[in-house]
Amino acid sequence: MVPSMTDGYDCYQNALAERMNGILKGEFLIYKCNSGKELKKLIAESIRTYNNKRPHLSLKYKTPNFIHNKKPEKLASLV
Image (cartoon, rainbow, N blue to C red; front, side):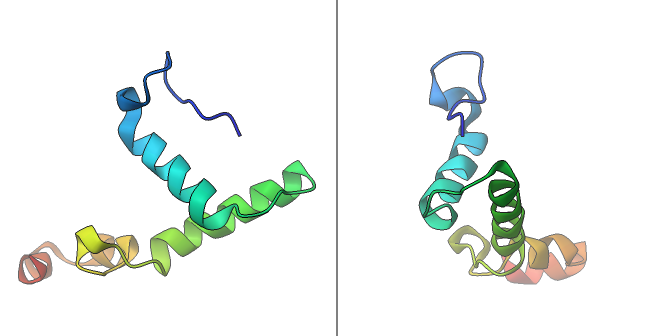
């Protein structure tokens, strides 16, 4: 996996992408894949887990999809 998604070597240019890459590498890609197909499958599974099962402190321990699917008037009660 290429670590940079920016036009230079400054990781702060795209902090969100760097954060996601760090989470993928640190929490989900914990072993070496044998093929590109295996890596692609593992990344897709990791993204599903991140969005649907992994609680986030910044979302008061809710998942991103839980928050995304809430109606705006219901979100106010979570703040």
